[in-house]
Each structure stands twice: as structure tokens, then as C-alpha cells.
Length: 257
Ligand code: G
Ligand code: G
Ligand code: MN
Ligand code: NA
Image 1: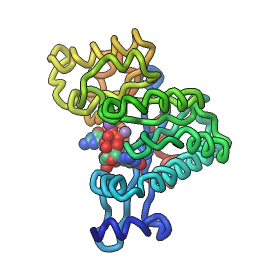
Image 2: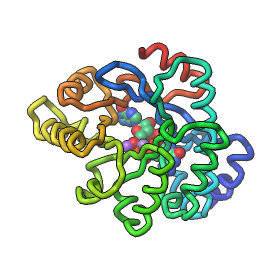
Image 3: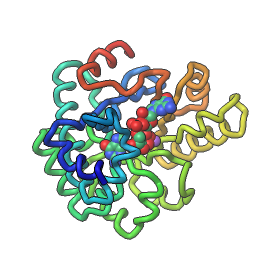
Image 4: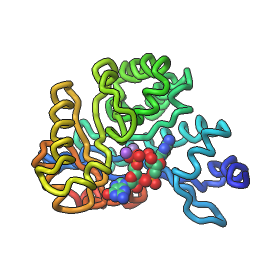
């Protein structure tokens, strides 16, 4: 209850900020994009994880305001990064969407307005949704995702394989990327372990459907090598870089390449 009260003022008091985690293309070794992750620096409790405060934002209706703020800051960061360094032409910034935003009938308009305001092309933005968000809102999500797709925005399924496992929606929905859940990467004990085979199958399925794959939560060199051998397109994880603050992003990307 107290946190809910504090969250109301977190934006104006400048307590929210974004950190960014690089995503690397396995084939080229280039940083292909960054995922923006929200943080709350609470004056008394210190750093609070989005796992703890996003649900509060959802319940109290603050999620639309926070979601709009995330999009704004992330696009602003994309613009300054693009000015500072030679980013690949298809470099993107990825943001996480929550349910409250997905079911907002103005989502596509909000995203369109933000892109126009920041003069950023749709393809420079990736929006991450979880399978369960999509599956639990099938009626709304199809039209909303199509509208986002029409803006050129890329769509990624986050934590793929960890929730609902309906594959049917993959052929019907305009999805660009599957982010393979960290749990599969964690339990991949060898290249011919069941989880490695499963990752290989997800990669093959994604390819045949014209989607790309990102392995999430890669923490070791061995995991990175296996992921590469399994043909996964991209890697994200502490092994390459933890999420970094905006001020360090430029240097971090430079160091990785
Ligand atoms: O960054 P971290 O591991 O603490 O993220 C924990 C969870 O919070 C993840 O599920 C992540 O997707 C989610 N998250 C991080 N940033 C955002 C955000 O800006 N919006 C939403 N809706 N979720 C976020
Ligand atoms: O649900 P989503 O995939 O958006 O959540 C991403 C979260 O995973 C971020 O909060 C980020 O801090 C965390 N993360 C990213 N890479 C790693 C990793 O290699 N190991 C662990 N444990 N967490 C990671
Ligand atoms: Mn994510
Ligand atoms: Na994820």
C-alpha cells in the first residue's frame, strides 16, 4: 500500500530509470540491439525490482503512464546512441510490455505518436510480450499486434517456452523473434542433452516460420558456444554484459565489438 503511494510520485521525483542490456548477433558478433529494463530507486528501500513494482503498477492503473515513460526514455536513448556511434542500420531498442498496455485500445496510437515525436522508425523498436499475455488476451491481442506490425515495430515473444505452450498462435500472429527462456539455457548440460535438442528444435521451427531466436540468460562461455552451435541467431546474458546504465551504454557496446 505504501509502495503504491510512493510509485505514484516516482516519475516526477525522478526515481525511475532504465538500464540497458546488449543483445549480440552470434553470426557477426555485433551488438544488434539493447533491451531496456526499468529500475526504481526508492529513497528508503533502495533499488526495487520491476518484478515487485510492475504488478503494483498494473493493479493501480499506473502501468499506462509508466509504460509511456519507458517508451519515451528508451526512444530518446536510441536517438542519442545513434548520434554518438555508428550503429548497425537495423539496430533496435527493445521494451517490455505488460498486460495493462496490451489491452489498452490506444496502444498502437501511443506507440505511433512516440515514434513520430522522437523521429524514430518503427523497425528500430522491438516490443516484447510473453506468451501468456498473448494467450490470455487472444481476442484483443491479434488486432493490436497487427496494428503494431503496421508501424514496422518488431515483436518478440519473451520467456518463450516457459508458459503456455500453444504453438498455434505462432503461425497466426505477426511475431519476429522468439526469446528462448533462460531455464532452457540453464539446463543445457551438453550439446546432446534434451534441453539442447529442444533449443535446436525451437531454432529450426523459428527459422522455418521466418522468425529469429535470442537465447536469454547466457552466463558462461560454454553456454554461448553451445548456443552458437545450435544455430541461435542472438545471445543476451550476463556472460556478455549485465544491464548497464545509460551513461555506460556507449562504452559497453564499444567494448563488446
Ligand atoms: O530486469 P529484471 O531482471 O529485474 O526484470 C525483471 C522482470 O521485469 C522481467 O520479467 C522483465 O521483463 C520485467 N521488466 C523489466 N523492465 C520492464 C518494463 O519496463 N516494463 C515491464 N512491463 N516489465 C519490465
Ligand atoms: O523477462 P525478461 O526476459 O524481460 O527479463 C530479463 C531479466 O533477466 C532482466 O531483469 C535481466 O536483469 C535478467 N537477466 C539478463 N541476463 C541474465 C543472466 O545472464 N542471468 C540472470 N540470472 N539474469 C539475467
Ligand atoms: Mn524481456
Ligand atoms: Na525473458
